Length: 391
Image (tube, helix red, strand yellow):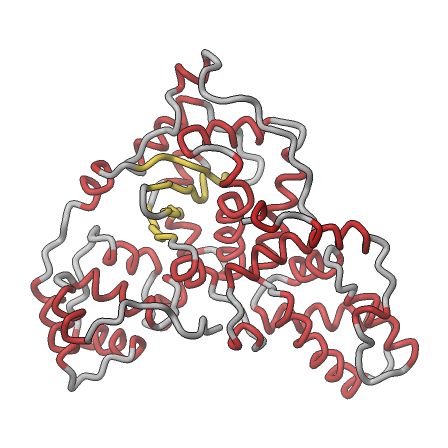
């Protein structure tokens, strides 16, 4: 799905082009202008996402094959008769690989969060220190300070957010562009890079060393999300984007609750507390709302339901809801199980509206307010809150 108009510096093409002194900078800048995530772009040029990431972060020399450079230019919309194309080819031939690892180590950054594989043991202080060193950053709080009880207090009690509160945050991230109302899968990578200021780095070794699929590093001016190469290159695109959305959920939902120097330790304590189950549910709901935005899903469900009636008539409730669920999964490029979780835990009551329409043999779905919402009072309390606290 396109992200609509982006806010780029209002400089002349010549001035901007003159400032791009490396192939990596030019490639990343024009990829983001095209609204393409790493893996989406890699698929369009028939390359691996880890390869694109390595080139953009100076960990690998640029491509030099003429055929591949032509494919890249076509995807990025670079005319081969333009001055940009000449510089593009020149940088590809002469760009010097930089020491990316040294640049990271010299930056002021801290390990903020990590997402492990299922059933993986929790990381202890020694593993966290090793992981931080592996991605070239530091722990938010030294292990000795944490053990002495000087780092931070226990995580405060935090009630689970309502579905509408999750929707509110995700909608702000996605924006209110007309393109977001058009049905289609959300390119989560492009959303995070363009709208949330997240840098994506695909690196080898997180899973074998720590059973970590992804981790977040907070820098002074941006956030970096490191993803293991196996996950980025081999996992299905839908589950890969789901992981990215869950990882960013932490920063979106709780970043304001604790200062950056103690956030990693605070989150580690939260993960070990009794409230972690509720926190994990909020992360999951945030991810599903980002993958399946409310307005596009509502609009597409109307179309899919009409298609169901035209093709199969007045079927049984379970057949109809299953058919709509599977069609939405196809159109939004997510697993059917995620669509099911989204629709049963979301205050639009799509399943109930489908059942009502089939029972009445109506060709369209009833309005959302026709279905009684048992949690209406709890959901409506969102608008009684200080919305600045949800920022």
